[in-house]
Image 1 (cartoon, rainbow, N blue to C red):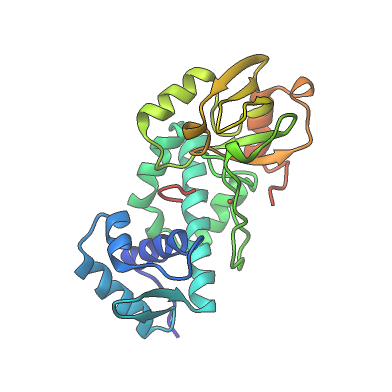
Image 2: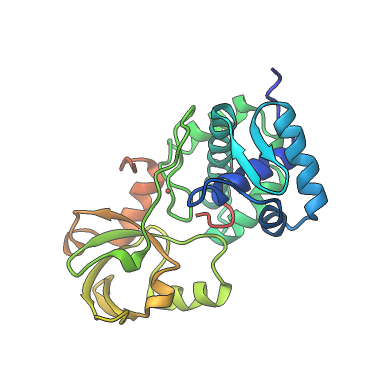
Length: 250
């Protein structure tokens, strides 16, 4: 079977993967909203994917992956995150700008070029958002819990989805809460109360609603023994194996 994928097919596979992380099937209406296209366009793309045995589609019900389709979806997410890393690390784009620009050319790169790009980037383990870059042939990406799931004393690295509201991103940036930054939960107030975080030596307060929009990779590293700027460099260089949102995207 020819597994060369078009841009629309890869983007649809990525969207299906995100929508089936917490439910069994993805619905074409939800996919259309995520992709910014009409339901008819999504239905036509899904039909092509089904004809190639990459998804199972039950009209008026939903879309599910076949094993091959799931692997190709994860591969498409890997491709996106490597290109994001290139845009951020080599061309100097901000993490949210890299997310916006990556789809404009990621689908045109031959696998050989993508592999060399990954090596040239020193085999990064995360995308600029802080989410893990899956291994080749991987068929699942471990989910990261929301920041609000942590308890007092927990330490973690921050990941921010590309779909996060720009005003929220600006607010978080003002607190120093950025992708790759290490935080420690100092307090968690009861009854859905706010979190008090230690960020770069300062205590910051974050409400429950915003804390649920941020994701984290828990770590045992103390905030007192590591500099966040150094940590971000180490993560890009692939020195810490990270066992993922996409946000939007990925």
